[in-house]
Length: 604
Picture 1 (cartoon, rainbow, N blue to C red):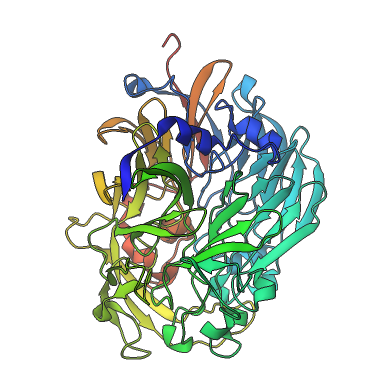
Picture 2: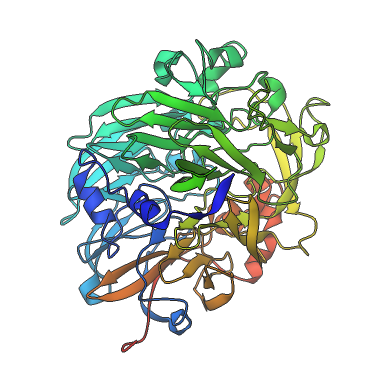
């Protein structure tokens, strides 16, 4: 088992990625400077940990609003601003406006970029019109627009350096995710599994936007950049045609597996890590087999895209348990030896820790006790089912076939945790995880594939999990050494905001009602709260400017949890079951789009 305490010094170095010079020196240098933020993940390791400590557990209760900025756009504001060289870069939901704000003058607008997109793309965007933010490298700010156009903007002027289309909205492909610059390339995913889009990850050359490599989630080995003998799952070669053999006929061509989540990168191993989404359709009876490699963790060589190892968490997904949540990289002690680890909090309700060099599975435990679709994960390396979930037949969705309602399944399709990223503190050795606490009824039905049309095939009803007094969220601290929750803060609604841990012993997160909260990293005790104008589905960030530390967060209700309110939905089945599950939100918040920046009073 992983020990409760990490090797703090070596972990801190690993988190920052302060290793090989062959990695992108500009990004590494800026990651090493906690005054700025150039990636949505804060660092390559996806820890969302800041070494800033001017704001700490002793004084965070005195935070005040320093300044605000209206984005001028409604819908869900996911992601966070970036800060580079005294300039803050703010993005919006569709139409994906980018603002450059002057930090010397409380957010004076330096330039604005507003792309001209065909609005019809909004019809194929699952679960709100969100965008998870920008990335910075080599004097450029990178935006992945809803219509899949990647744009490299000059950081000083906003001028377009280059742009390229990463997909085709007519096929149901869209973009909601951020991108990650790695060395001389930009790593980019795609969305669209709910429309039968075949998922792929791509690497574009930073210099001019030309395509360096592309790897699909399903299909022939050559198109997946998968080596049958050298790519492994749990230490064994995957073998030839591993994906093709797990689908019926040509179903892999509309098989989903879109990587619309987060990326991590280990410069020492030169591996990029990410997860793939659900298989298409949501009706499991229509797609026999394991449906590889949907719901899978991939480790790929950054230069070539070839997969080093894979691990499928939910074979033959019957519940829409995408595997796209972030991979958090740490160095910790396992059985007396320091190991390079990857920890992943999956939608399916299990927290996985693997050796990130080899893909060996070390732990897999439920991080919500109500999870019931599986009783556990087979952890016996000698078992033919090693690494597979031990299913509870009472909570599957195909035993009776289509057009049947399967009730009491936990978690709901939006998962025990969705895309909202967790954080890790090397000071406490704990992971801080925003979670959902819902269950569902699931009715699969037959659906035919039509390009650009929904390819879902299930009706969902979601509701609070038992034992939560009607609450639908918790903010938890997870001890991956002991495989248990260290402490938990119950929340009225799902926590749809990304967490931020700091060297000041504080962890920040936002709530769907709109509160920015600060809690003690060791105990979870609430230290501060402030009600912003709209629900928070964005990720908290921190930076310094002229020696003063600031905390910033976007508010603007939306995302899957807030889609009913954000889109004004009336149909009880709209929003894939989320509309009624979060109907009470309208009593606590309203639409808006605002950046709120906080600081301590002068003199502290």
